[in-house]
Image (cartoon, rainbow, N blue to C red; front, side):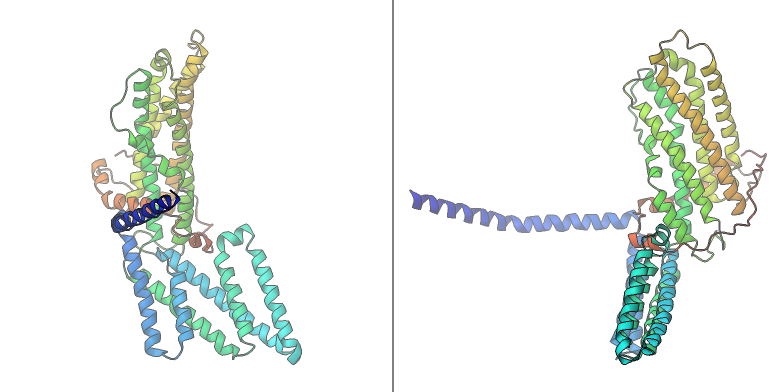
Length: 482
């Protein structure tokens, strides 16, 4: 019986093995098909990813060709040049420029200090020289590493500190046995050539401008807020009235893309300030004002999220309360949404946002009316538990109107400092909308990116800030409504 049992186990094992081997090609084919679909989807979401990959390959080929042709016997130089291309080449022009300059300045400074440390060690004699060199390496590595824990250093100069530690240690230690001047010159020249190749390819071959991405991202975020807010009033009072909506209401959740965009906006603003003038964006464009606009847009998004919670709450306002506040709340929601969409359009096509003024005034008028209702005595005869849900929605909408006005003021400031064009009286709103198609397409590409872009991108040093002496934006608004 035991022999039979052992034979059965062996037979079962071989049967499972054969089944696994037969299924292996099918699983492999399914995995390959799934991977191909993911790769295709990744490229279709933003074709610039494919272009970026080709650009990195082109930059590496240029550097390799240069060293194979001119410095065939100097493989060490070629290695550092190739490493520079791999580490410096980033998705956008601004990120590549910032990282290239960061790496170059850190290499230059570390090389100079390394040469000085080597000559200082020589003065201590044959026995004391290696001891002093080791002590200097220990000292600079300890200090530099500790400085990396400082928040400002971590956020702006972390990559530079890494390159500084690496270059100083390599030059100081290697210079003990080699010609230190030749070593420092070799290191600086290879880094310069690699960084120059990155910058050249990044700017010349289908450049990706971080500034344009930031501009389109901010406009798209505000437009999503407008879409979410414009239809909220009708949807909310339809549900409180007992009606069920069968339409697709995904546009009501467009605000969610704004809630987590802070890191993307800050990274893009940092990179954009390194970029030269291009297209519609001149030198010293006020990129930091985009961050101010983005912050206010997120404040609006948080309040729209609260409204969305009220929309899906189990306890809704009674029909009696809804009838009292419906007109004013719907008007605040609709007019605020329209104003946000007009502000987004003004940013996209870079014109003064005067078309949003009338909608903001209408929303403020509705907010004033609902405040009067809330202060009146009509609630005395109504159960308090029935009043709370409706009053909550009304108070959030009033707050939203206030932040919409603040957002409008910040966009006026941006339009003033960025010198947006004034809208001609004869220009129709339909004509303005026809000019936004290309901007929307580009902005949607930006939204598809994982604009954490790279953890290493966030370690770039902050570029020089905009001119702090620039005049404050005038809050004069055009009287012409389009």
